[in-house]
Image (cartoon, rainbow, N blue to C red; front, side):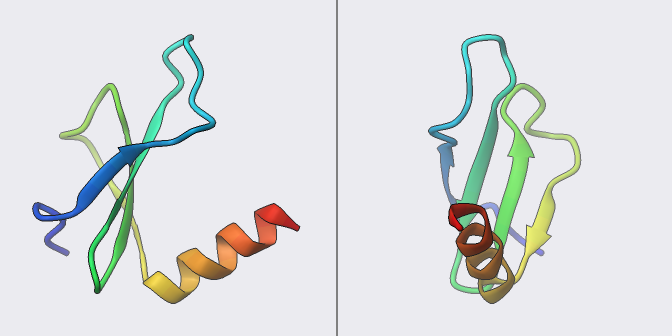
Amino acid sequence: MDLSHAAWRKSSRSNSGGNCVEVGRTTAAVGVRDTKDRDSATLVFSPGAWERFTAFLKG
């Protein structure tokens, strides 16, 4: 999945201890990556799966 044009943003839940993730969105996919190692593996979800996941977390 090509996420090179994704709009990436750092999670608001990231902390100052270096435990940070970024979420990037395109119309076809949502990616999650480690802020410190952006060239490493990226988890990729469909937009629908991401919406269900975040809705579950919000309770």
